[in-house]
Amino acid sequence: MYHKGIYPTVERVRIAFQEAAGYRGSYSSFRKIFNNLGFRYVLGNDGRRILMERSDIRECRKKFLKIMHSHRVNSLYEQVVYLDETWVNQNYCQRHIWVNSQGEGGMRVPTGKGGRLIVTHAGSSEVGFIEGMGLVFRSGSRDPLSDYHKDMNADCFTWWFEELLRRLDRPSIIVMDNASYHSKISNKIPNTTYRKTQIQSWLQQQNVLFSDSNTVKELLDKVKDYVVKNKITSSYQLDDLALSMGHLVVRLPPYHCKYNPIELIWAQVKRFVAQRNTTFRMIDVERLTHEALASISKEDWIKCVRHAENIQEEDYIKECVRDEVPQVVIPLGEESSDNTSDEF
Image (cartoon, one colour):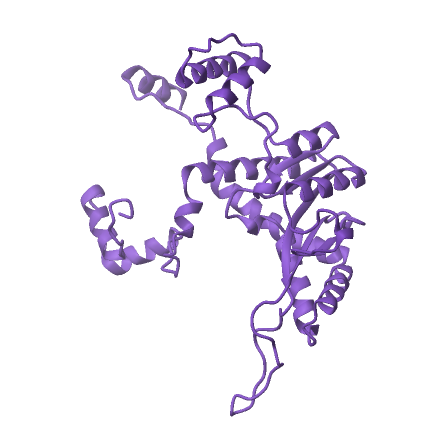
């Protein structure tokens, strides 16, 4: 019905089921069946669900869930490290406050969000936060000592990620999202967005013969033939780097931050800052952020990881287990019926 642009109601679905399968039950009976099947009438018409159910995202989700479940069952690696970035604004404070009957009360909070701190960290249930990997810096900093830490970008994140790999003392699964600065491709394959000279340069690097008279389409056909023949695929630089050091990067499916327990850790960090931010000065917010990170214990990580992995496992059972159940086909021919009756 959604695909046809029709808002489904219990009655519309009941009538459709009646026409399709001869159902004769009443509205109230069908509503009970509808609820028992797991359907809920909820707020959710914002387009997000449609994005999450796109076929490509659904396949990404199933791939992620299968890898994580396999690790939990077979202990493929010694630990799972979750990483992410977040931001803390200078004027960040509690949203809910107590006021009197005249509505008076609260802090004198400056207008706007103020400056911004960028925070990057990684952790696991085995060790909590990875020691020495907390990166906190001001967005747009003009401090010459800040090197290139002015904003989070591919260079900044790559520098941080390489340091993380050096600090991991055991083979690990590293879970992260698909932010653009996480996803620099190492061996880009030319496509229709490439200029003719770029395609020619790539073909020269692969020692593929071509003529200057070849059109862009003809050059791309040569690229395609070479890629298929040599089974070449694009990959992410950071994934390859991690693999070379004995670790596996697993990418979160888009729009599924609930699978990453560090999101719950960030909530604790921001709550710590909000409850104590009374001066709204950047230097104080920066100090509070460091204190908040230091306050997170290994036990906090264990709880958050357990919560996220329970969600992962629930979704794995719902989406992947049924795909793994072998299909049993029983032929219904006359000969098969005789054999079956003899066996029983």
